Image 1: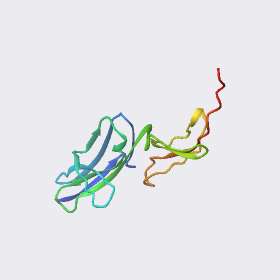
Image 2 (image 1 turned 30 degrees about the horizontal axis):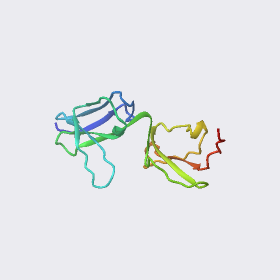
Image 3 (image 1 turned 90 degrees about the vertical axis):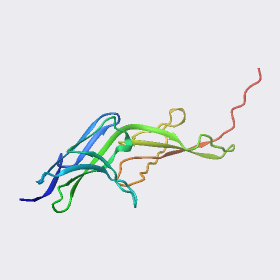
Image 4 (image 1 turned 120 degrees about the vertical axis):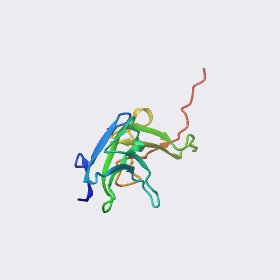
Length: 169
């Protein structure tokens, strides 16, 4: 008797967390008759982006995980009886703050304020920031995609003042 495929995620929640540099194993179980073949893809964000096959079989192991590997992975089971079926699994990658600057030079005049920006990628969200001379700063975070907990911007202001007078020797 021919039975269409069915598939389920292990764990059933489909949620997995890994640390940057570590390994993670995604797993799904499929059933049907004939026995379904299984393959894995990673969902791509944006219109018109197709997902390439990244693995075959019920287990997908990712070694030395990087933050760019976070996202939704799909396990697809197909046995040519009815439609292929998929289950989504979400991988979150935890990593310490990775800080970069957009502009290495900021020009300003005496008495004017300059906006200093640094780009911070982190998961989970950083809780503290430090400014000039160890002073705390007003920090603003935003995420490019509301569904992802990746925070990318912190800014603070700096007033340019003349240096104190240096007494002659």
